[in-house]
Length: 246
Length: 204
Ligand SMILES: [Fe+2]
Ligand SMILES: [Fe+2]
Image (spheres, rainbow over the protein chains, first blue to last red):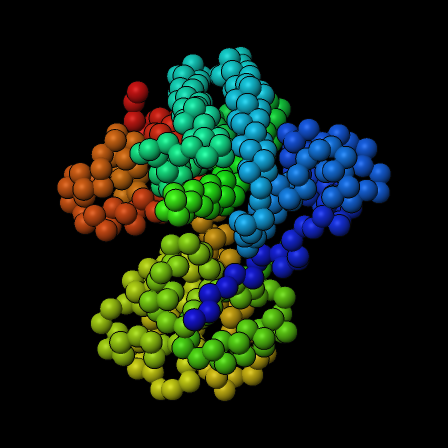
């Protein structure tokens, strides 16, 4: 049986031999990945491998994150990642959470309060919007806290050879909730249904932030689902087989 | 404006699917064949994930008595145009349910013309909708029934409860909810509640 979707760009995945500057020129969302991994700008004509090496970052992890973000068909090879690379990935995800909650969400919050406290605002409507946003912010907070406090420590444990009883990465995968749906709802409410009288420059500023963050959230979830989960599942299996062998 | 029409093909023959696809892509850049299925059940398993503008389907896959309507079997939204791709005789009762019919003996240009015509009725329909919307901005294009269901959703009712209140089947409730999400772009219950509050459909 055939099922295919041709809307996908069929180009090849990113490779370590490409020029880093070419990669970024083709997909500017990669800037965020570079920044979180602590890779310094000023690439010159260096390749991805060279830049990563110079910054002591695993090129494999960097490329896997970029490929997952930009190609739906990309499937990382589990065998080829070392434990320290998995630890780098966890660090990357933690940094992302931190950036979302301490940088992106506060700037969005500021826009929301500018809108709801503007001169033309209807206090009833403002309250509704404020409440929706606060509810969403709390949901995000608990999503990230659960991963920071439960999932990542479990992974770190696995990396040092200890497997916590009663938990598995499969459990995380099953309950991993969607964090971008409500963001997209907020976007549509502002775009389509916000009554007149609100400062449109702030509304547009907020909208562009929401579009960007939605894309970030989608990529973030894909890295968790399609890189972290299979990597950890692979490690879990290898621990199991060691225990069996002894 | 360069509007592209997103097309799904359902036909058991791989060779025919491939042939139609090649002919269409050569003749006009307007057609994008994004999905290709070998059977109705194959299509159904993906139906929720795809949103074609046009479905081209072999009518021989349906019951010739036309007892169950094609639209209900394909369970697509009202905006999707359904074109029969026939190579044997098809009963009148069945063929009437299609928006258009193309035949294996048509030339590629004829096929493209027919699809374009059918697709054309698609864009003029949405123009009409746009006019309706600007005439009655308060309704935002949701039907009265959809607005009723939306209010119940915003009040926190389950699908079963909504079905009971409005005396409709759970299946119908689900289909109304799908349409509400598609039209508003709002998926979460709390998002729909905001919509209902902003539009004065419910009070806080
Ligand atoms: Fe996360
Ligand atoms: Fe997550």
